[in-house]
Length: 219
Length: 154
Image (tube, rainbow over all chains, first blue to last red; front, side):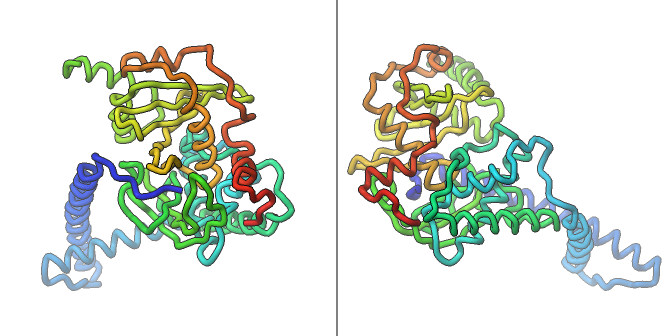
């Protein structure tokens, strides 16, 4: 479990991300404007007569038109690639190994999010996915309830993906912080989801905090 | 090192992580350019764990040498109280596994390194044995035993 990482590249990374986001905003604005013009022109031809009195109205029309397309596309099952290397059971046992000391409200959602990140990385990269612990071989009897929770969370994540839903929007990394920081992780990955605080039952030596925030990160 | 020499070494180092996106490669290479020494061991399953120390003596990188090349490194900081702060993908078992191997290797003889020498260091065949079956097997249970709480329920 990690403490916030003071990194000399953090500012540069933040600025680069901000610039990239601004560029994306500009690209979106231009695309929405064009789509809005198309939608308005089409509506005059069909007699629907969409209203767009100002440039902002035209952009809003375009965003709405593109949003409808995006919604239709989102209904397709989520699949990030053809390199899947993990079985359902291996996925559950990896998540169990990584979550076995965490509990409390939000734990189920945290496991669901991390399951998406695990599957995203595996589908896209196969054995080269971001490193995790290996699957736990034997589930201790005292941890059977936790394993059931992990299996249920994994089933929820798979059902979501079948319906085109990925709350992490393609994140491949997951990790835990000792606070609710939302900055770049490992100096380079923007945050996608955050759940916390969770309770961490293992507090000793290198892992001193009994609270944790479970995050997923974009690549 | 001159700028052109640094660029050449950077390209060589980036090629060691072919599966990583460019931004991640740059981040890794920026840290590899600060390397001072390295040490590695082989787990029971044949995989190798590698720890590199950086110019800031409290910071290290640890990763696994896999058939396809080195994994994405964990960043590890030595806290002032002697414990390790691990930044890595994964959860409790990954953190404990990285910390376990790093702590083991910290106290073994290190090979002095410069960025140029890293590829040869990675290719080295004679490495010491890690006292673990795999990098993560038993990491959680070992930590529980060490903490004096074997059988602790989550």
